[in-house]
Length: 351
Image (cartoon, rainbow, N blue to C red; front, top):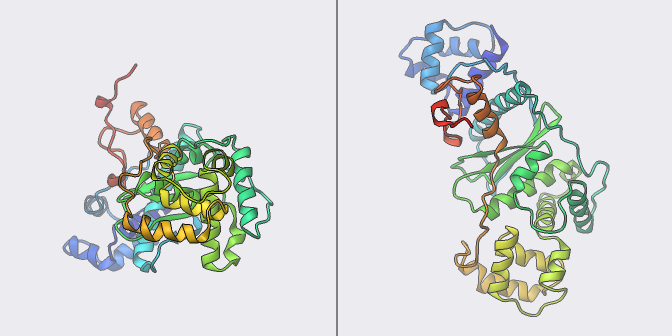
């Protein structure tokens, strides 16, 4: 049996959160769970009728026209406040694996591969000052300057990081890892999250990718290191010195709201950044959080980043595949309908 098909059947079942028993029961005895297990292990080939029934139940198309190949995910880690059940982890990882198979196939099809090269290769990270320096080096190596980073997602895509946004109901903030041990990926929560939080999470996950040495640190220290990196990328020290100052006894809501709107970073993260840079005292920091931020967790009325920050490369590749006839109308092999609306040739105006 085709190895790709067997892996595909296993991953899409897991992505749907289904057990072998549940699939067998839904098909009303058409196939046993033992047979499904053999399909997924490549030991037996399903008949065309069984494959059609499975695809209909999974709401997916068995389309392999794009030369998809199995991919290996490694070194992946979830970001969540609470422990994540193994079944949920398995479902999300399977979804990412299927998506990456499709993504890489599209890149190969159009010779649009963006190779990733670490901008901090060999850099040693010991303390928070090292992380500040690392953030400055990343900005310099990637030509980002010292001002607003318009789109975090698109910046990461341009340097070869695969970015995926998923509708995740569970309390999972993000996920990162490697594809085939050479291509980094970042998964972001698409639902119930502000654009500022999404930008911060993406850069936090980038820190985990760039600095595997952090894994040897205490968990809380490691997370604080990644937070420091993300805030330093979004709000460089030069910006703070210029628009806030080196020492402040008081801050106004209007200036914090302005920084949030201009730099796409939450007021809470800005205040934390000012404390880290010793612009404000710990006592004043605690006062702001206790008396203001905790009373307005959603930061309503405190500005908002006006630009859209989302991953676009996969969508652009799929659009091209539809327009150029590699994917037929209504047969885009879209295994995560929630993440992308199907593109129809009839809806695309050719210039």
